[in-house]
Image (cartoon, rainbow, N blue to C red; front, side, top):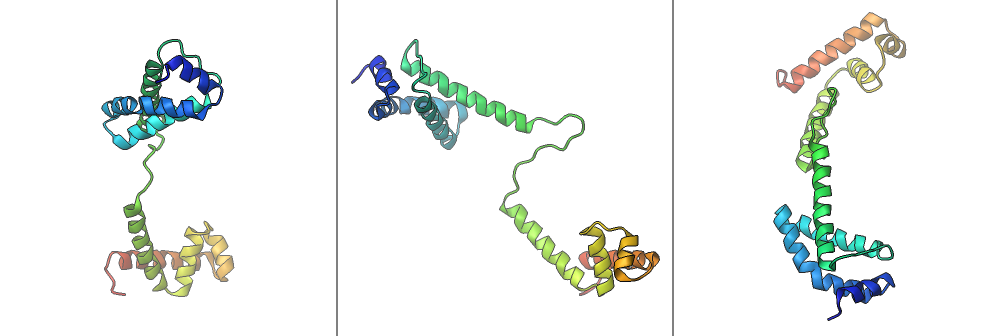
Length: 180
């Protein structure tokens, strides 16, 4: 078994077998440490992998004063601390009334949204064409009633009425007050 100083010397010279020897020698201890700190095997495996990737990337700049084992343990602890700080930054309550950062929506969220969109599309299809057009132009295109009136060739009051009746009908359809 090669001693740590020789392994580091060989690693600095780009010897892949040195990195493999370091990995084989220390991965179990690093993984135990990471699991005890995180309680998550998958995350711990990622942390240990990151430590060895960083070791390989910085091999020419590495300057270990003490033992390689203690150096790798410190790298593992620092990586876990960094991940925790990153998580805390994401979970902190934002200042100045900003919206809180939320986790990415999962498949359940998208399934519910898809179902809601299908209900909305079905309800829109039941509106008279002029009302559907007024609602879509106002919501989707963001047009004002004066612009909608020009497009529909009607008065502003008529386009506003079509929109209002369309919204009322949509509410009734979506709330189940009117049968389709």
